[in-house]
Length: 176
Image (cartoon, rainbow, N blue to C red):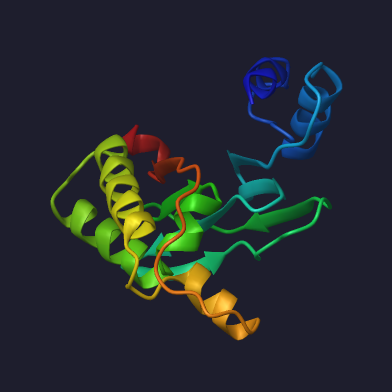
Protein backbone atom coordinates (compact mmCIF):
# COMPACT_ATOMS: atom_id res chain seq x y z
CA UNK A 1 0.00 0.00 0.00
CA UNK A 2 2.92 2.36 0.52
CA UNK A 3 3.57 2.06 -3.23
CA UNK A 4 -0.01 3.15 -3.89
CA UNK A 5 0.66 6.44 -2.08
CA UNK A 6 3.42 7.23 -4.57
CA UNK A 7 1.21 6.15 -7.46
CA UNK A 8 -1.60 8.43 -6.26
CA UNK A 9 0.81 11.37 -6.12
CA UNK A 10 1.63 10.76 -9.80
CA UNK A 11 -2.05 10.88 -10.81
CA UNK A 12 -3.50 13.97 -12.52
CA UNK A 13 -5.03 16.32 -9.92
CA UNK A 14 -8.73 15.56 -9.47
CA UNK A 15 -8.57 12.48 -11.69
CA UNK A 16 -7.36 9.52 -9.64
CA UNK A 17 -7.90 6.18 -11.38
CA UNK A 18 -7.87 3.44 -8.70
CA UNK A 19 -7.13 0.69 -11.26
CA UNK A 20 -4.11 2.58 -12.62
CA UNK A 21 -2.92 3.27 -9.05
CA UNK A 22 -3.16 -0.42 -8.14
CA UNK A 23 -1.30 -1.46 -11.30
CA UNK A 24 1.51 1.06 -10.68
CA UNK A 25 1.76 0.03 -7.01
CA UNK A 26 1.91 -3.65 -7.95
CA UNK A 27 4.50 -3.15 -10.67
CA UNK A 28 6.82 -1.35 -8.24
CA UNK A 29 6.47 -4.02 -5.53
CA UNK A 30 9.48 -6.24 -4.99
CA UNK A 31 8.02 -8.28 -2.12
CA UNK A 32 6.99 -11.87 -2.78
CA UNK A 33 3.53 -13.08 -1.89
CA UNK A 34 0.09 -11.64 -2.24
CA UNK A 35 -2.07 -9.01 -0.61
CA UNK A 36 -5.57 -7.66 -0.56
CA UNK A 37 -6.10 -4.09 -1.67
CA UNK A 38 -8.95 -1.62 -1.60
CA UNK A 39 -8.36 1.77 -3.20
CA UNK A 40 -11.16 4.34 -3.14
CA UNK A 41 -11.11 7.77 -4.77
CA UNK A 42 -13.74 10.49 -4.43
CA UNK A 43 -14.44 12.01 -7.85
CA UNK A 44 -17.15 14.18 -9.37
CA UNK A 45 -18.87 10.89 -10.37
CA UNK A 46 -18.97 9.65 -6.77
CA UNK A 47 -16.51 7.17 -5.41
CA UNK A 48 -14.47 5.05 -7.76
CA UNK A 49 -12.97 1.99 -6.17
CA UNK A 50 -11.02 -1.13 -6.96
CA UNK A 51 -11.01 -4.10 -4.65
CA UNK A 52 -8.77 -7.14 -4.73
CA UNK A 53 -9.24 -9.95 -2.23
CA UNK A 54 -11.22 -9.95 0.97
CA UNK A 55 -10.88 -6.33 2.03
CA UNK A 56 -13.88 -4.18 1.22
CA UNK A 57 -16.03 -1.18 2.01
CA UNK A 58 -19.54 -0.05 2.77
CA UNK A 59 -21.30 3.26 2.21
CA UNK A 60 -23.60 4.38 5.03
CA UNK A 61 -26.31 7.00 4.54
CA UNK A 62 -28.64 8.07 7.35
CA UNK A 63 -27.76 5.02 9.45
CA UNK A 64 -28.35 2.48 6.65
CA UNK A 65 -25.89 0.62 4.44
CA UNK A 66 -26.65 1.76 0.90
CA UNK A 67 -23.76 -0.15 -0.70
CA UNK A 68 -21.49 -3.01 0.26
CA UNK A 69 -18.66 -4.26 -1.92
CA UNK A 70 -19.18 -7.94 -2.75
CA UNK A 71 -17.33 -10.57 -0.71
CA UNK A 72 -14.35 -11.85 -2.66
CA UNK A 73 -12.14 -14.84 -1.97
CA UNK A 74 -10.17 -15.06 -5.21
CA UNK A 75 -7.58 -12.93 -6.94
CA UNK A 76 -9.60 -11.02 -9.56
CA UNK A 77 -10.11 -7.30 -9.12
CA UNK A 78 -13.50 -5.63 -9.11
CA UNK A 79 -14.11 -2.02 -10.15
CA UNK A 80 -16.95 0.10 -8.76
CA UNK A 81 -18.44 3.54 -9.26
CA UNK A 82 -20.95 4.48 -6.55
CA UNK A 83 -22.84 7.75 -6.21
CA UNK A 84 -22.37 9.42 -2.85
CA UNK A 85 -23.79 12.54 -1.24
CA UNK A 86 -22.70 14.91 1.52
CA UNK A 87 -23.33 13.21 4.86
CA UNK A 88 -22.48 9.72 3.57
CA UNK A 89 -19.87 7.75 5.47
CA UNK A 90 -17.47 5.31 3.80
CA UNK A 91 -16.08 2.52 5.98
CA UNK A 92 -13.25 0.53 4.40
CA UNK A 93 -11.63 -2.40 6.11
CA UNK A 94 -9.79 -5.67 5.95
CA UNK A 95 -11.48 -9.03 6.35
CA UNK A 96 -10.96 -8.88 10.11
CA UNK A 97 -13.66 -6.19 10.17
CA UNK A 98 -16.18 -7.87 7.89
CA UNK A 99 -15.63 -11.35 9.40
CA UNK A 100 -16.52 -10.10 12.88
CA UNK A 101 -19.12 -7.33 12.53
CA UNK A 102 -22.41 -7.37 10.69
CA UNK A 103 -23.26 -4.28 8.62
CA UNK A 104 -25.95 -3.34 11.13
CA UNK A 105 -23.35 -3.21 13.90
CA UNK A 106 -21.06 -1.00 11.80
CA UNK A 107 -23.87 1.33 10.77
CA UNK A 108 -25.00 1.61 14.40
CA UNK A 109 -21.54 2.84 15.43
CA UNK A 110 -21.45 5.22 12.45
CA UNK A 111 -24.88 6.65 13.29
CA UNK A 112 -23.86 7.20 16.92
CA UNK A 113 -20.55 8.78 15.85
CA UNK A 114 -22.15 11.16 13.37
CA UNK A 115 -24.83 12.15 15.90
CA UNK A 116 -22.10 12.78 18.51
CA UNK A 117 -19.98 14.73 15.96
CA UNK A 118 -17.04 12.34 16.38
CA UNK A 119 -14.18 12.55 13.92
CA UNK A 120 -13.66 9.86 11.27
CA UNK A 121 -10.53 8.72 13.15
CA UNK A 122 -12.40 8.23 16.43
CA UNK A 123 -15.20 6.45 14.56
CA UNK A 124 -12.65 4.08 12.98
CA UNK A 125 -11.11 3.42 16.40
CA UNK A 126 -14.53 2.57 17.88
CA UNK A 127 -15.29 0.20 15.01
CA UNK A 128 -11.86 -1.45 15.29
CA UNK A 129 -12.21 -1.88 19.07
CA UNK A 130 -15.58 -3.65 18.74
CA UNK A 131 -14.18 -5.75 15.89
CA UNK A 132 -11.31 -6.92 18.09
CA UNK A 133 -13.69 -7.67 20.96
CA UNK A 134 -15.91 -9.76 18.66
CA UNK A 135 -12.89 -11.51 17.14
CA UNK A 136 -11.95 -12.77 20.60
CA UNK A 137 -15.50 -13.84 21.48
CA UNK A 138 -15.90 -17.63 21.42
CA UNK A 139 -19.72 -17.67 21.58
CA UNK A 140 -21.27 -14.69 19.76
CA UNK A 141 -22.61 -15.21 16.25
CA UNK A 142 -20.46 -13.36 13.69
CA UNK A 143 -20.51 -13.13 9.89
CA UNK A 144 -17.58 -15.57 9.75
CA UNK A 145 -19.38 -18.07 12.02
CA UNK A 146 -22.55 -17.77 9.93
CA UNK A 147 -20.61 -18.42 6.70
CA UNK A 148 -18.78 -21.38 8.27
CA UNK A 149 -22.06 -22.88 9.48
CA UNK A 150 -23.65 -22.41 6.05
CA UNK A 151 -20.67 -24.30 4.58
CA UNK A 152 -21.33 -27.19 6.97
CA UNK A 153 -18.76 -26.46 9.67
CA UNK A 154 -19.50 -26.34 13.37
CA UNK A 155 -18.00 -22.96 14.22
CA UNK A 156 -19.00 -20.35 16.77
CA UNK A 157 -17.63 -16.99 17.74
CA UNK A 158 -15.34 -14.52 16.08
CA UNK A 159 -12.20 -14.90 14.01
CA UNK A 160 -9.04 -13.09 15.04
CA UNK A 161 -7.43 -11.63 11.96
CA UNK A 162 -5.83 -8.42 10.84
CA UNK A 163 -8.07 -5.44 11.56
CA UNK A 164 -7.71 -2.26 9.57
CA UNK A 165 -10.53 0.29 9.49
CA UNK A 166 -10.57 3.58 7.59
CA UNK A 167 -13.57 5.90 7.90
CA UNK A 168 -14.26 8.85 5.59
CA UNK A 169 -17.03 11.42 5.83
CA UNK A 170 -18.30 12.80 2.54
CA UNK A 171 -18.88 16.54 2.68
CA UNK A 172 -19.65 19.20 0.10
CA UNK A 173 -16.81 21.34 -1.19
CA UNK A 174 -18.12 24.27 0.84
CA UNK A 175 -17.86 22.21 4.07
CA UNK A 176 -14.14 21.49 3.62
